[in-house]
Amino acid sequence: MPEPTHILIVDDDQAIRDLLLEGLSDSGYRCDTACDGVEGLKKVRTNGFQLVVSDIDMPEMDGVNLLQEIKKIRPDTEIIMLTGVVDVEIAIQSMRLGACDYLTKPFNLAEVRITVERALEKQRLLRENREYQKTLEMKVAERTAELSRKNREVEELFRRLQTSYQTTLEALATALDTRDTETLGHSLRVAAYTVAVARRMGVREPDLTDIYRGALLHDVGKIGIPDAILRKPGKLTPEEWVEMRRHPEIGYRILHGINFLKAAREIVLSHQETYDGSGYPRGLKGKDIPLGARIFAVVDTLDAMTSDRPYRKALPYEAARAEILKFSGAQFDPEVVKAFLEIPDGEWAEIHRRVMQDVLVRSQMRF
Image (cartoon, rainbow, N blue to C red; front, side):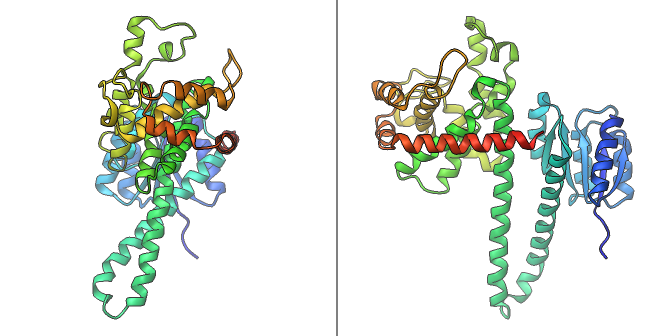
């Protein structure tokens, strides 16, 4: 009978350690705990943990430093970071440094178990892939059939990893949307709308995925905007408006260095540009604006007009169509507007319904 997976829980909060210890032990894992990063690193040096669940904000040694030290001595150990909402940017940094996922406090045990299972599945798949690569060179000649099967496994691994990345990005976008209750689900909707128009314009993979991710993460830079500005009910002062206009560049910097988001971050940087050059931050004009950002400008207006707001009900699609057509050639690319107008109202309504159903499912999973 195989040994149970060995998990280390590192958190300076006794209540969280006890909660995770009980919940993961009940799921059949063998668990150990540490009260800070220093104690956690000592235990990693002397024990073979397959997985570490670590808080970010701890005394003595924080979670990011612990992550870096673990990856030096045990690079195969998977690490899940625990973070507060204010630490989401640090969580993204941790993923760049090798963490496989993160959980935002407060969390529930069902969410923890799913994240742990996904991390261990990724670890298993990567281990199998490495073993395959070691034997492949020796056996290519006599194992052509086996090679084909293994290639399919590698493709499946890549698909699963891409799905894992996508799930993490969508969770991040949803977390960002929750900072503004008026726009819950906005990022997922505009991402789906953007792909619909891009397909109509003949865009194919992998560009569709890049466009989706850019639209999904368009407001990631608002992590760096204070809530006092982001949630201000009244009109922004000139100084506050200058600060708000920084969010595309902040978002670009956050995503810098994440290779699979290289194309997406250009959309993040350019999503407030307008076709006539009056947008920001660079005042780009016409085709100098990435296609994904030109499409986003149209569907962002669609979503704003056809979504409920505290001060008004959602407007009909025909009102949004008229507004977008009115500003074709000025605010919007005429080619994008043409493709947008070719999509019937029923298709927009179905995308909206599907995305909001997904948002509802995600919200229920967190409670």
